[in-house]
Image (cartoon, rainbow, N blue to C red):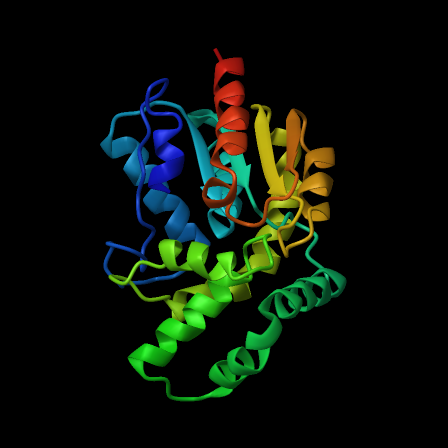
Length: 245
């Protein structure tokens, strides 16, 4: 998220953090949204910030929205980037899977082979992660692998246990959020790429349920807007932050 922070660090203090079990944080659990929300509030308290704009990307977008619902007194705004909304259905899952396979093209058989293999070498894990990342970009060409290479950080591996554990809790947490959306009175910016393999309908439906929400659909952009078209994302973010003054 450093490139995103750099888009705003001349107009706001930007604090980034690695979630529990991810990045530079240690791998200790528990991997629950209750714990992750408490962690986020501890980060806020550590920096002595009374209220802030909380933002996230993909799964982090969901976490940001959950935080706004649970700790509304500390939130001035929400940046919800490339999230899935709260009505993820079997149809959405089917569309997502289909979109990913189309983007893999000639690599789809290799991707399936690696996904089904029980024991992967370090090189195979890297290859699987790279191919999976490549499906997130909207440009279905060899350029996607170049973008995925830049996004892949060799220091870290995907925490699949954390991912799976939070995934099992997501449906219950989304039901809880639906009951709380009317209490999120701060301005919410929902950013979504029209070429994100995750359908944009989720973000649009979420906006309909929020008191103050704006949807920014970025044309020809996939799941990682700061890598594909940074200027478009920067414009949306800076306009949003300016509107909060």
